[in-house]
Every structure is written in structure tokens, then in C-alpha cells.
Image: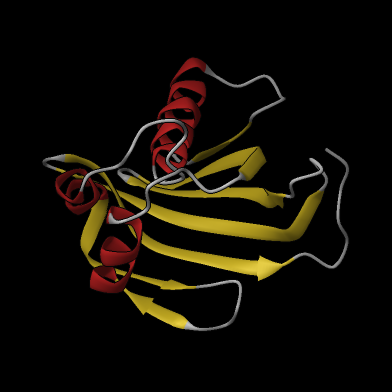
Length: 140
């Protein structure tokens, strides 16, 4: 059954678990303290993955894997306000916001993000991602 779970709200157990699981996978793509290997990226990104970035540019799976696989350090990104909508069995839309953390710890490049996750035989895979510049920023 389709449903919705907001990180700060009360969720049914299954939806809360789905939110936690997809949030962890999404954050893994942000390299939070751990380098994400090419092999792991290939597991996480669906074979037909594509992205429309904050810039409005479209990116292929290969472009994203090649970019993320060579990052030496995690990008300074803060993500929060995660919401999951289960669209159907094995299909979920994860929405959240992110911002880059500047050297002075202020937040810049505020972005609203949406990720479409599909459950496959090998686990959840990111099928589509989009980032849109936020009309207003938020505080750290």
C-alpha cells in the first residue's frame, strides 16, 4: 500500500524503515566520511539512471559514476527534511533539501531534491534524481 513518511513525523513502522533505508542510501552517495567505490556506485545507480542537476544540465549514469568515483574527500553537503512517498510496491520518491557548507560553516547553494528509488533483486537502486535551486535558503 502506498504511503508517506516525513522524517520528523510519526510514521508507521514499515514506512519509517523505508525512510531510514532510503535516506541512508542517498547519504551514501554524498560520501559521508566513506569513499563510495565505483562498484558500490554501480550497485546503487539503476542501469537506466539519469539526473537533472541543480544547474539544469542532464547527466547520465556513467557521468555520475565517473565523477563520484574519483572524489577524494566528501563534498561539504548538509541534507535534511527527508520525506518518502511510496508510489507503489517497490517504487518510492524521496524528497529532501540540501545545501553546501561554506568554510565559515554557512549554508550556500540551497537545493530542493527528489530521488526516485526502485527496488530490484539486488536491493534499492536510484533510478532518477533531480535538484532544483531553492527559492529561499534556510539556516544551518
